[in-house]
Image (cartoon, rainbow, N blue to C red; front, side, top):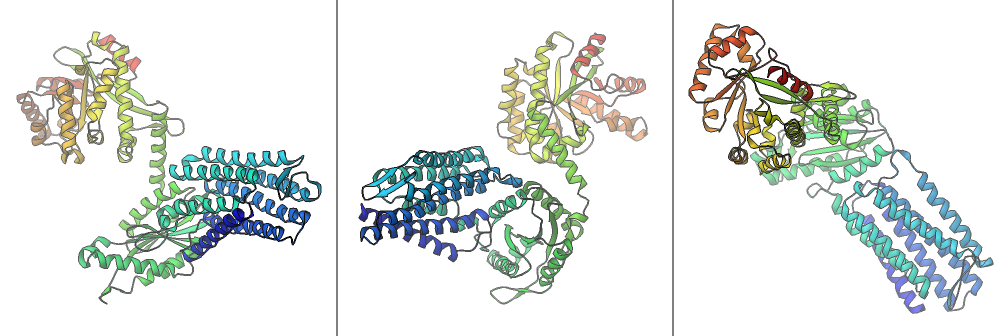
Length: 639
């Protein structure tokens, strides 16, 4: 067995030395979990060396059994220490120690203390493990030692499963595989007395290096700086411990012009130069390549005044030319913005949002200069984020409210339809206007889920209240261009109608033409074609405002045209506007469109609009938007 143990120990030592050399040869990654890689290798190297020395000394009879057991007690302590360090690393890597929640860390080291006591009592008392030429024997406390080891392993797996969403899925697999592999090797070692643990731990180190700590994963290929992924892990760690630090964000101005004028190769060379220069600014602690032409410099424990001074040093470099490989001097400028953390942002997500917003403002108001995020009015951004959070919460809780504004038919002298209008009442923000939350939902993609919630609510309302038996022929549902730009979105619409057994004729899709719609893609037209073919009618909202034009209504299969309320109101204040409205309605009638006048608020408006050929009326003269229960009462009174 001695020969086998020697081979495995020598292999483990060679692996550890090789990886330590890699560590110092590669560029430093500023992550605490990465420093674990070095420490773990050193601990494995020491433990393996102790085991090999003990085996050699015992084999050549330079120590007796008692001396051998004292050396093996030291080895056993190192194994226990490695197990605890690995458990500590997993908690660190999985971000379990956020906000200084370190009770589990102290629990691990309490286990280490218990295991250490058993280790060093064993040579004299044989209460734990006692080693001899035939293997090892288990003492009275050996079972407790095994139990503590099992608790460590189970805790590690539990932490990985609990925090699995905080790291890539493949990394979770590697961590669990490393634990299983080491546990199996531990059992084999104690069963056959072959030194496998050092070898197994070195294999674990190799796996972690290749799949988790490989510097290539954290480096920007062009500048060789730490990349955005590294920055995220680094800042997550910093935010999790509520440490004070500052960030200088450097964004090159009009760098596309540099690439276009001098070529991409010259542009890349200049970016490398900028990165090298920033790395040489000694007042900066860490530099990250944030994007293709953006950099982030992290400064530890510096006041905003100090950070501004560092920014001025960086800015001064851009007042001088940068030289390409052809030695031609090229002038470049950069916009710089300084952030204090956690004052300006409390986590990585909010920091990135602030960077995007603050840099866009800086580019507009102080291009090529230095801006301080704390001096900017970021209330609009924070307000939008609060509204976004409220929309997400309402969607998740199915708490969006759908109100209905009745539409009056002049011909039938009754309410024949209604427009569904989404409302949002947040516990913290109160009632939020659709004019506020709809654009935000469109910008961040929430409009897709929001629109589906509204359509489901409308279909349920139609089914539950048996609207087919009332005077209400259909309900108008607003649809964003963002929804119609989703490939085959019509299938989602059709599936919802079929789910609630709602006829296509009972739904009208209302579209507001925007700049987005004016440049509609084939996807939009494909969705509209299938919607109309299915039997759902379309209406064009807010006609007469925005981007609406005759070419648009002539080539889109609208059934209803809704005259914008501001056009209606203006017609009763301005003679020219009144004439324009009258001839617009005549034209739309000649084109066989059904016409809805929005914003009808007086009897005078109602009568005039009816006289000039408007078929339907919508506005506060008839009813404001009301809840579903109130709507049923309104149409009940009308009938």
